[in-house]
Image (cartoon, rainbow, N blue to C red; front, side, top):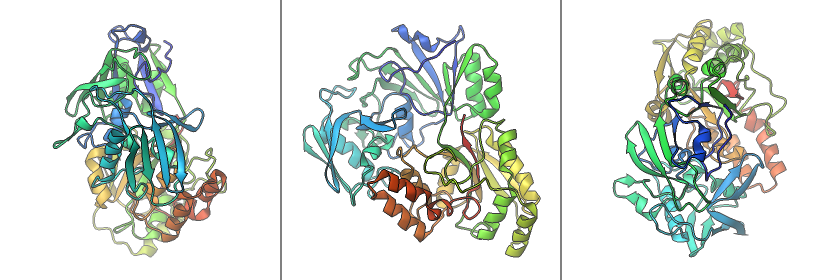
Length: 488
């Protein structure tokens, strides 16, 4: 079958995917069935809401994928530019003040009008969150207010040339005032997007109907269902059996089987995503830089990429893929050095009392195999490890609190905002909201602070390539042996 991406007005909201599979079996309507006004689609999604739909959390991504949640701006992956969405235009009134003009005649799915007061209410709700969003938080935005009915004024603590990028983050999504209840966020019919959530089976699925009054034109599908399936192998199976029309984030281990099935189309796209072994800097044994170096030297990244990933990924050289414009071209792939790693372990004086735990998140089916290989590679240098599989949602509280040894996880470097600064801020600054490895380097923080206020894009990218920025977070000196930036 042939499958073409549906526009936002025609189908579920498009997002950047590493691997997406589409089924065309008799029991499940093909995506082409969007021409049928009664057609509905089933999507197997790798992410489940776990925070009562709080927009400052990753639950916002589920609402965005579902075609419900929209933002003031959007980032076009093709043009590499920020474009209008709920705002038609924006301007910088001063170094620290931006004004966004809202689109006329937009209504929430509950029938109330979109206005500046509603937008300000949504953004301020996120800013007041106990655990702020990575892209939209009091460190990046100090005030949001309605300048008039159609103008939203955003004030930043310091000059921020990338604020329009932040407004494209799903965490800056806009909901109707009625969505904010004493019990939490209620997204049901409170978005502006082409599809309205109408019911949910907790932990299982979200059902959607078309928004008959969508501001961007006729919605071609009658609706559909988003299924929360964290296990990658199960997502692959559902598209094979026809239980799902579209399965997202397909494991590399399932790729050959799906490509051999003439009833399934596999869509591939480069994704700025890195699979990483995070080592906990905040406690023993990996608060010792020599043990972090030893862990890196034990790992054979090219071998892992060729075996577990079957060539669908490449070894990382640092925080970015070699093909990205802000990558440091002088960095090479870390090479295994078992003998040197043994010496570092011995010199550290570390006396292991119990096995170190490697958490392999279940959302990436291949991680269990990767963790087993790492377990054997660590054994060669005198470190004993055990593999534990958990969903990311179950592991995250302990990981963020620093109560773990190692975790295999994955991160889209451009998902907070479509510029590396969001990733570099959240993941590696001392107070970063997604600093899983609990890394802290004051010199690095100063460099990132300089980059956040740099208006010249070329100079900003030079800062991203600076040795303090890339060497401090590359595997040999930092905590995160980077396994494979996905390029599926």
